[in-house]
Length: 101
Image (tube, rainbow, N blue to C red; front, top):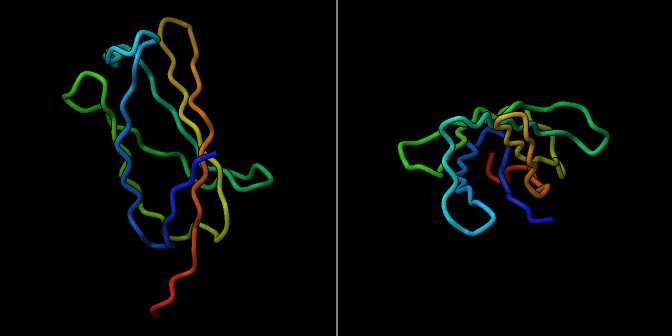
C-alpha cells in the first residue's frame, strides 16, 4: 500500500489520472468518482471532494486536513459508470504531528 504524508491543517492536494485497460486515457465525462478517508477501525474521517478537470482523464482533490487524527488512515477511489464499479488500490494517508508549533 502506497502512502501520502500530511500534517494536520495541511491542504491535501492530489492529482489523479485514470486509464483504460489498454493504457489510454479514460474519459471521465459520465463517470461518478467517490472517495472516503477512514481510520484503522473504519470510522469515517472525510469524504474527499473530487473535481474533474478540463483534461479528459484527470481529476483533483483539494481538502483541508484540520481535525484529522494522527496515524495511518486509509483511502481509495471508486469510479462508477453505466452501472459498473471500479475501485482503485487502497492507499494510506499518514497524518504526522507537526514539529514546529
